[in-house]
Length: 537
Image 1 (cartoon, rainbow, N blue to C red):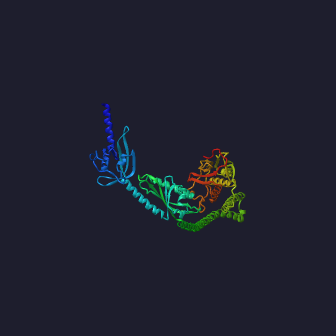
Image 2 (cartoon, rainbow, N blue to C red; image 1 turned 90 degrees about the horizontal axis):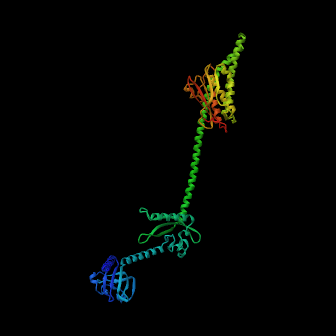
Image 3 (cartoon, helix red, strand yellow; image 1 turned 180 degrees about the vertical axis):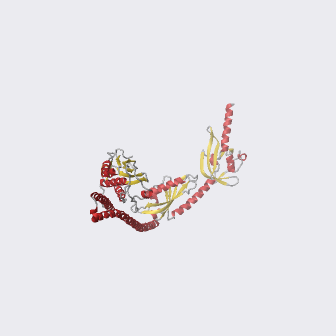
């Protein structure tokens, strides 16, 4: 009983499968009568299952063009027709794939199984495709452009006969070659990039499935030809990627014209650039000359004003000196020895001050003419400061002023000794001049703004400077001279020399001052080349 049940279930499953398939399936006995037909077979022949069962199959469907008709299927163990025309009861026809196979029970024939697949639509599509291919082949073979078809390995599987006129090859000579063989090295890279772009566009909805390239192709005779090549994607019926179709057009003349045009444009651009450069240089020279003129006029005005100020400052000491000489010339007999000695000392001091002024003026003049050479060497700045303090010690003693040198003995600088002597002599002289009796002057290391410089300060406890003097102290055309605390003469020329000299040795000079509290002059001086002893603070 179980076995019968299983057989029944298996039969039902088999019938379900036969009914579900889209193939028409027929079973006929040895007399050609239908013993089974599935739903698809019934629809295919246009006859219900009940109408077909027990009926001779030749009455239901006929094989067109075969005299034996259905009987040929009964007499042969196995037959297959890939394309055969069948006629229904109503007289309509269709094209089908047909296969038949004899059924044996033991050694005896029991009938035939026949399967049918309607391929009418497929045949129609094929005819249309063949018609299109024929039409397009006709167009391709009569086109003056080269039409290529490449497979997915970039090999040429079709090329139009126009390749002979354009590149000199026969069609057979290039079939199955890689397209790259017919390109110059530079165009090989362009083609590879173009095909890669085309492949990427396969996965894009927005991009058109084609690329435009300008390729230089190799002719059979070794010459080259520029072509305008458009590559497009080729698909099979199921829309799978199949290869590439390309069209190449001769653009040699256009490329030559473009090259001539480009050369002309380059030539014009070059000439324009030369002209623009010439105009720029001219304008630049005019601007520079204008600046030089303005600078010369400014310097001339500054020097004129400076000499005017200097002449005014020289007038007083010379007037005093001339007055003393007149006394000596006219009234020398009316003075005592001690009075004559005092007048002589005053004359000596006036002459000394005038000499210092003239010496500074001479040095300043030489600087302006760039006649002073800079001689750099390494030396101890502390020793140089001590020497200049010693030169001023008598003046300091007379005013009861203390000068303290706090600069370390081993602080080595690279500078011009003569220039630094002039700088410190003037700074110490000024500090003494504007410091009251009983005051103090300190020379010391101060904080620096650079690792390659030492900063030296000269600080006094003097009368300081008002802002209008401090801010114009190093300007040649401004009057900043004023007498010292004991009417010592001053022209301001010494500080101009200090600024010129410190800049000559790549240093810097500036001042901080508060009126009534004293002044501090700062000097930034380059350290010796191998000095690593901590003065870079």
